[in-house]
Image (spheres, rainbow, N blue to C red):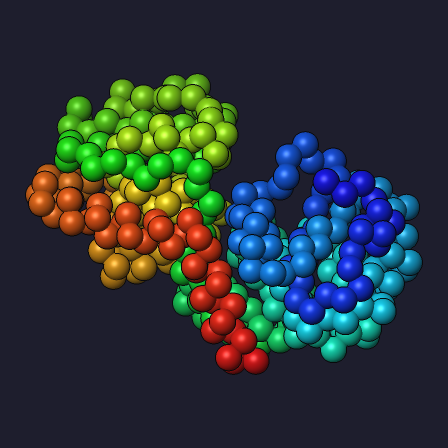
Length: 351
């Protein structure tokens, strides 16, 4: 990881044409969120220059230095045609300064690859929504998760051209899941702190759910088997169930809370984990990604987890085998970055 902004300046080329720009936290002990680092790796293979900008969110003095010294000089003297910016970063100071520097010192096209819309998730107030719309309108193009996210932004006066990503790609080092006998088995992976529904599940012994992730609940339903924690690279080889479950919140009859409601707009990264591993999906019917899953025959959507035993019982072994084959074909594209590559081609035709 780069240690300082000055170190970054010494490393970059002055003949860059197309860059992917990511902001990193120098206090993190890992490479950063997997969705972002995977996009970096796919882009590097396609000839992009990868700029990883270290930004110390904790130091007020460093923020002032970044704003008034480092960032205004970041792009000066460099030939840049296209900038792909991994959005968001969690500093108003950084966003304002970065956009100002790009617009005042380059003529590059600016595209935001949107990972989250925080006015839909963490900062759900009118003032933040207005500020976020200003940032997004400063770009030439946006790559967003879903039609629902696009509609939300347009209803909040975002006029920048947009294309839909659909699902995130996922660089998966493990072999694709082999053909499985259809046993109506499920798995769930994620931060379990926000998955209170796991203590409410009652499949009456008809289904078993294998659960992976940090922050396990004090107690789980009898139908839940907690399997521990694995790295994102190792986890896929442990996912041997028939389906991966995409759910959030504390209830089994709906997805609730900030993260559950957010599913009506975003594409959770666990969708990509499951699909790239070869697992069909079970997802909340109101989730934005449900349309993609159902229309492409990659899983099923349910209103309530209470309905799941009966719905899986209606799915024949032949139906499942065909679904599993479709998922494995999609997985090959996710493992090679086809979603983001296609989205970039589409946005460039618009702008």
